[in-house]
Image (cartoon, rainbow, N blue to C red):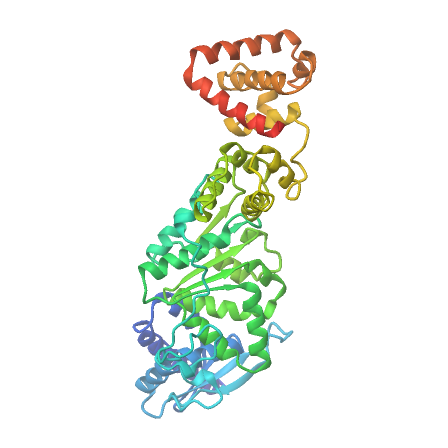
Length: 491
């Protein structure tokens, strides 16, 4: 009995010793992240003659090793066990309900040679100089060397992507990524924000800039919906390996609307494999989403954790000044001439997204051309009715209060608080002045909207504003700018 125990101990010791020697060789031939991801989870469980059995966590893990590290493993095992050394695998079954004794299956290792490709794509890696090795709708036909059609809109560039407080961080990060794709800490770069706020324009601008600065790098933009549909088609045709290998070739992968993956679990699995390969290979990954990664309910945690490896940059709705700039850029690009007061009117009233903003401008110009009319505020008001329901809204004291708070970057509650802080007092006085000028509210009613001030306080505030306008140039400039905003809202 004791002798059997000793024999078992010796076998276990020999098995671990052989595998530790193998790990020492492997560690010198791969980077630390690859070693940590694909080799540390392996356990050596048996050594029978010249056959070493390795236990791996899943079928996918086994296939990945055989696909990507078959030659390294083959050479390593022969170096440690001799020319007849071989590997076998024991795969833990993920569906097993037993935690103490999980079910497993044994799989033979490959012969560590790369046979000619027949139907199993996993046996031979793709080569850039052979376009017949890959099935992809993005290959440009007629070229001997495989060249990927990047699927980018040439009009989406940084030059016409207007920068504002709403997108400054994301735009700056995008320019860094374009300059050094895969070589910055912004990998992956996840850009998130509301519909129509400029995410697609930004990420395609990155792609176009990469192609300009790094013409030898392959860039691909693809929507998540198209990615999912491609995966489904390849699954039906038993061409999953073709699908995975194609995406592993890309130097800069731009995937739009990643939040659509939450309802596609199998797509998440395959994207996980693609993501790992690209990231470990120093390739750049750029993603967009309507929501922050932390809010993607239904997305696998292992993917979410990888999304957090790089930078998550949000894009906000464009503010009034940014909307004005966007319209000016669009006018210049289209060769349009529109009066400035109309531009401001459109910018003020279309607040939902950039697409509607640009659409309103084109609709305005089209109406003027078709009806042979001058572009003015009256025409803009008629056109705006098709875009927004609030173009003819009644101006209220609350509207003015919110505009002043936004302009001075102060909280609404602070404006109503009875404080003597200079910046709050001035903002409150200006608000009272504008409320008196642009609404039909009584002085008493205006005072009540500020927490119960009486009419004499409102009168004093209005007089103070008028006096400062006469003596302080900067103050007057700010007031006129605010007054113009309120006028636009009252049209």
